[in-house]
Image 1: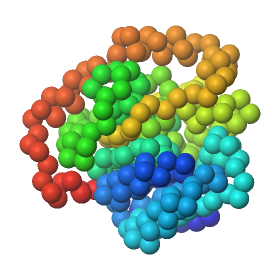
Image 2: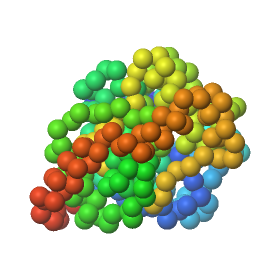
Image 3: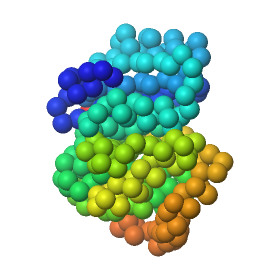
Image 4: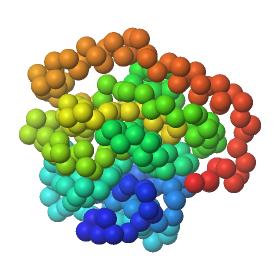
Length: 287
C-alpha cells in the first residue's frame, strides 16, 4: 500500500487482510467490513497468489462498491503466509496496523474500538478484541470455541462490548483473529520471523512476545468483538519453535487458561449483553 500513511480516516489504523483460498469466508469478511467500519478506512487486501477466479470476482465487485479506502495486491508467485504478511507490514512503515484473520467477521465499530484502546495507553503494543474463537480472548468462556454469532447477535455483542468501562488487561500474547499492532513498537522489535515460523498464528505470538520484552504490553480490547468460524493454529513445528525461544510462554499460557484472570471482564460483558434489547435495523449497520 504505497500511500498507506497518506489517506484514510484520522486515528484509524490500516486494516491488513491476507487473502486465502476460502472465497465464502472472504465474502462474509468483506461484507462485515463494509457494514461495521467507517467509510474511508484504509483496507489492504494482500493476496499471496491464493485467490481463485471466484474470489477474485468477489474482490473486484467489492472494490467497485465499497465505501472504504481499499487496495488489492496480488503476488505472481506464492511467498508463504508469514513472509508475505511481513512484507506487507514492512510496506506500512511505522503506521499502526490491524491484522485481520481471513475468516474473521468484525462487529460494528470494531476498528475504532481497537484504535481507542491503543490510544488510552501508549505502552500497548498489541490489542486483541474478544472473539467467539479467541483462545485467551474468547467469549463467553476462556479457551473455548463457541459458535459464530449471526449478524443480529454480533451487533448486540459489539454494542455491549462498546459500553464496557475500558480496563485493557494483559494477555499472554496477541491472538490472531484481530490484532492491532502499534507501528512504532513493531519497528523496534523487527519484523515477523519467517525463517522460524510457518503460520501467522505463531509469528504474531513471537512478535508480540518480542515487543513485550522491550517493555510494551499485549492487551485485551474488551470494548470490541470480532467473530470467527474457528480458532487459528500453528503449522507443524511452530509450537516447538516458540517453546525453544520462549520457554516461559507455554506455562504462562496454561496458567492463564486455567485461572482466567479476565473472568471479571467476561462477566461484565455477559451482564451488559443480558440488558440489551435486540438491535434495530439501523444498529445492525452502525459503525
